[in-house]
Image (cartoon, rainbow, N blue to C red):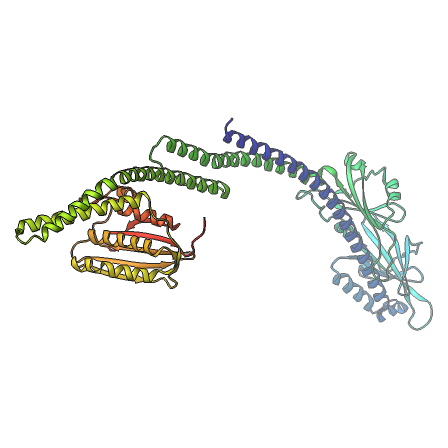
Length: 590
């Protein structure tokens, strides 16, 4: 089983399990929240409608009380002969925009003295026992009766005698009872648009006295109403029941009892708001459909993400495996550029560093093997070569002192001296490569070492008319090093640069300070080094000069490595090669 397949299955299982669990939790939780919210909305709506009804009754009582105190009401004494009272009643009828269908005044003989409808003047209106009565602000208000056929509620109030005791008669007004239906027609919460609104107004005796418009004119069969009213103990609440006029469907009922308004305490009426469960819970099923869509999208997204994540994790591992395989087979390899999570990227980085270290170790092993060969050669040849070289050198010096030696003899003797000196230097270099002296670390000024080295090579530079430029930019140039070794490094690099530049060329020596290291750069404007040869210049016996041996840069690299530093070559801004030597400021004991 591959990593990609394992990750893919894991992601899919996790996404499906989490999606199913979250879906179930959301549905159950939101269903309870919605049910609670519906109950609260039904209760709130019932309370609001009941308050509006109490407010409406209070306003009617206030109107009747104010009208009964009008001075013009005293016209009852003279039978409203000048029609002033009729004119006022007609203005009241018009001013209230049809809220009051009829407004009229009856004297003590039950005769209609004045009315907004002139046809009623002179008719008898016998006073009967009122349906409901209430005392409000020292006035006794009566609800005489409710005319369900004409949908009128008749109010009445005594008209006091302003010039004596007792009453002159009564003021009557018929209120448009359809106003109550309009209040009951408020849309139900959480219901679809244009859905019917079922609302009932119940009086203190448990009788339905008003309904919403959709129920008006229909027989409302509500067999469970008496039992429901007994359960409605609080001022507001909700419950569940069935309603015959709704085909015995289950309905949610929100109710509110009359609380009165200001000084009016109400008649003990209550409002019932009914909502069929299928309508009330329709959002739940809509929610369920939305959840199914969400679940499907989650599964689809989980599959996409699973493929993407598995590929994102597995692909870098496959690349690293292929990179390792090619490295083991000795093929030219380049570390893969991995763009993934931070952990995978870190793994790839450390893996590439490990491969680089292995490659460096392999190169070091080759270099050590070559140096071992040089050591064996140097050890076996040093004594055998130096003794004859010494004899040849001494013989050439004796020949040069002979008085009758010809010019050709002098020249040949000089050749012998120079070549023996070169061979002696080669043997010395081979011995240094094979068995270098351990560095002795002390505190030195790098700029001072560079200045001393430049003095040593000045004559060589003048001979080739090469200009040496310095850019010693390091502010703190002190470091732990072996002075003689660093001089040898700089001498080799400078002499190598002088040998590769043309006559009248330029060589630049610069320093740069970093956090924990000092960097020396030796630039020249010579022919430069190709990219292929940049990795070979430090190998033993590799040289680009016919007269070179190829051990100078090898010795330089050994000294730098012994100082826990590093050396590498790049292209110079001057056009040739640039050797970088990076040395630690403080030597760390191994």
